[in-house]
Length: 412
Image (cartoon, rainbow, N blue to C red):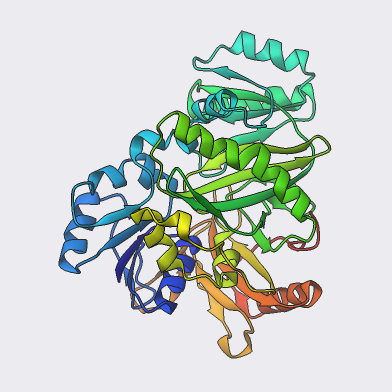
């Protein structure tokens, strides 16, 4: 099959490599030219993407990032011979609006945190709730924020500071105030046609910028799969309280959703709670899940689109542990440096490298070009050995002011 993957992160690189290994002709539209299958084209220029896809007889487009879907890429190609794996624009509210997503959860009995929605910014009322809760809350910007629009507070002063941050960054935004839940966060991704669903094995994304889960929220600093603490009983409860009610909600509300669906879940003493939906695969969770997947991804995508998902076997994964470590630029997730030469001793590497924020200069040298620069990915039957292997690989990849967390895979 001729497939175009659209997006410029390591997630999209992982998707492309999986599909290439399944003998597809794959083009990765990602605004750089690092690999021979990379196409240097702006990811938000739908007319140019359409022209390219027609020229290359593309049959399927996979939109890697949420902004493409929220901006209507699936609708743009509707009625053509090119299928898009992802929901129509009217169903992207599940990620595009935190308020609409929470209201959907509430309507359909999905276990989620208590919340107050502000469709209009009202600072006095917001501060009143903050005071009532003594600042022990979560503030969420309603729109897309690339994983950086959620601010967690543990006390009154911190909550006021976080409110001021959102107010200034998004200009008096619509937002949510949620109760702060305590527990382990996990990611469960899936494919669904709105009626049937097949889930991936659980994974864990390390969202905060610094060791011991401290610092600022990021797009993700690393990931691991599988998770030994997610037992069959825990998974059964997640299905009963979150996944099945979601699909039932789609049916009840006539939501004809087709694509990837991500469940961001926290495991608390009161059971699993849904924190958020994403309408695409997670980054960096995809970088560990797809190498672990034994099931043919091409078949899975085709079966989702053609309505035969109910007849499909459950998704299979290998028995190894998989880990991804993000190498970031100094300053990420705020203002970060770019154009730093990347030096790699490939002969000493015992891991794969997935490109994220990179580019080439006129002399074909690799330079940093983003906050998250590279992902180091590997697997092993033993988790401790895997962690050692991945961190050993970081010694053979260097750029000025390189930064990474030192505790991926060692804490939950």
